[in-house]
Each structure stands twice: as C-alpha cells, then as structure tokens.
Image 1 (cartoon, rainbow, N blue to C red):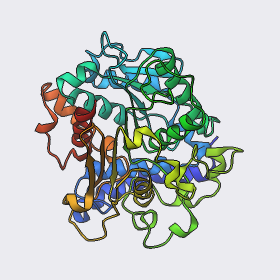
Image 2 (image 1 turned 180 degrees about the vertical axis):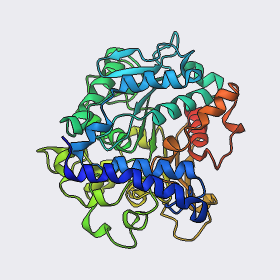
Image 3 (image 1 turned 90 degrees about the horizontal axis):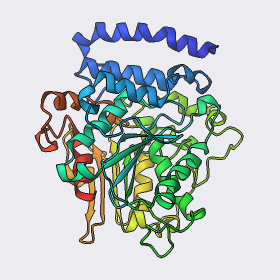
Image 4 (image 1 turned 45 degrees about the vertical axis):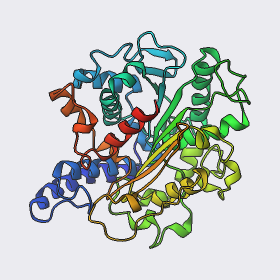
Length: 417
C-alpha cells in the first residue's frame, strides 16, 4: 500500500508533465540551467525528481525489477551495445553480474566494478547501464580489449536492506576478485550512492583488511583499487541544518538539480536508509557527516599513489559536500564552487583541478558548467545512438559540451587502465 503522500505525488505528476509541455513553447523548461531549452531533457528532470521525492517506504514501486532484468532489458532495447559482449549478464557470484568480461583475461587486466546510484533505495536504471556500456565501447581498442565491467547488484533499503548492507556486499565481491581469484587491477566506478560506497570502502579496507592477496604489490598485502571514478558521489548522506540557507549548494541549487530539496529536510528518511543504525557520522557510512581529517585519507594508496577521477555538476545540490571531500582527501586539490556567472562555458581555471605525475598517478576533478547530479549517465545516454549509427565512433568525435562527462570519463580510463 502507498502512503497518502505518495498518492499525492503520483497523481500530481501527470499534471506537472502536461503543464510543462504546454508552457515550454513560451517560457522554456521549468528548471533553469543547462537543459532549459530542451523539452526532452526537461521532462526527464521532472520524472527523476518525482521518483526521488517518493518516501522510502513507497519507493519499492520503482524498484520492482531486478538488476538482471534491467540489464537484459537494455540488451533488448539496445542490442548494438550488447550483442558482441563476452559473458554479458552472466553471474560472477550471487550478487554481481558481468556487463562484459574480457576473453582470456589475465589477473592484471582491469576490472571495473560498477556501483550504481539511487540513494541506496532505487534500483539500477536503464540509462545508467546504457551509458556505462557506451563508455566501454568508446574506449581505445587496446584498453577495451583488456577491460571487463562487473555490476554489483546490491540490496536496497526500500526492501529492508539498510546501510551498511551494501558495503558488506561490495567487500565480499572484492575479496573474491582479489584474494580468491588473484585479480590485481580493480577500478571502482560509482555514481551518487555508488560513489560514496566506493569511498567508504577504502576506509573499510583500512579497518578490515582481507587476507593478504598474492596479487598485492603493497607492504600491507592489500590489493587497493587501482583507480576510482566518482560521478557526483553522495559524500554527505544527511545535510546539516545550517546548509538549508542561501550560500550553500543544497539550497542555492534546489530548483536546478535532478535531486529534489524537500526530501533532504525530512529527518524521517534517516531511519529508512540506516534502520536502527541511526548515526551517519561514520567513515564507513557517510564521510561527510564527520568532521574531515586529513589523517583519515593520507595513507590510502588509491588516493595518493594511484588515480582518481571525480566529476560533478555546477548546479547540483551536493557541490559543496563533494568538493569539501576532494580538498581533504586528494592532495593539492583546491577547487571551489564557481560563484561568478560563466554562461555554461567551461573554464579550466575554475572548473578543473588536475594533477598528473610521471609515475602514472593522476587526479582529475572536473565541474561540469551548469551540470546536474549524475548528468553524465542520465542525460548523456543518447550517446548510445551515436554508437548505433557509427560503431567506429570515438570519444574524440563527440561534442565535448553535449557529452561533457562521457568524453572525460573515457579519456581518464584510456589514460589509466
């Protein structure tokens, strides 16, 4: 059964949808920013905001399909993305599936473990899978031939599996990949909740190191992730009260972003996500809900020896939280939220921090001008149509503004895999 609040939201959505279509020719989209001149993208924004506004106890209605059903649904709707992928949809274990497994892969070949977003409440969406597969197809031939992608099918809070269940699932899969099977080149790619899951897992490895892995090259015997790809990571699960006022991104961007503002002011959501574990102030749960300390991060090889890519949108509500973590955890990063009007034009001096060293260590933090939360996956999935038209298309052929995130993620992976 739905709550009254859910019924009001569900019944109100068609009216908002119709209103948006009617007024668009005269005033443009109802959300100011990058997608205001696109009706299709405006309607997507409206749909996503409506889904994310549902109470957690009612969100199951949007997560009735399993991850595997979503994955196979993408294969039916976009066969050009999946038809030649080795072991597509095949189980690695009972909580993860291959999107692609490189034929004859060796223990040092890269495996990208994809951690989907959705607030630990919503299931993987087709757009996320489509874009991840498109990124794979856009890799340079040498990198793509060696790369595998594994999808973690973690359990959801709307089904009663509250945080940190997902962390334990990731730990189990990671230990099988590294300790049991000897894989040494693991890349964690996470968006939104999947992003904070990847970051929290680094702390989990520190506190609960697995048995020494024969594939490890570090003194502690731990096979640390070779790289992180963080797409709008949800670094602070519960905003502090002082952030709900002008001057903070969660307030300033409340009418621009895919993430609605009001649910974040609802303290009742805490129990729905955390259950009886009511404190989010834990490095294994929500690093941003603790006072940041450099000592928590400086000794993690993934962050100071390997490679990290972070992308976020200038108009997303979590800008402040993401950049605060970057300034503490990524040595040398001093990037701050742009305050001056920039007309959605990328300016490297205010939108990017990049540190590339000769030993292969690369840190790249990029703010998409006027971008929204996880825009790279939800709004750039149309790149799959470009691949359908031209199977030999490369990232360099794409418009760097239209496919801002996809192009830069591919460039990072080509550089670091």
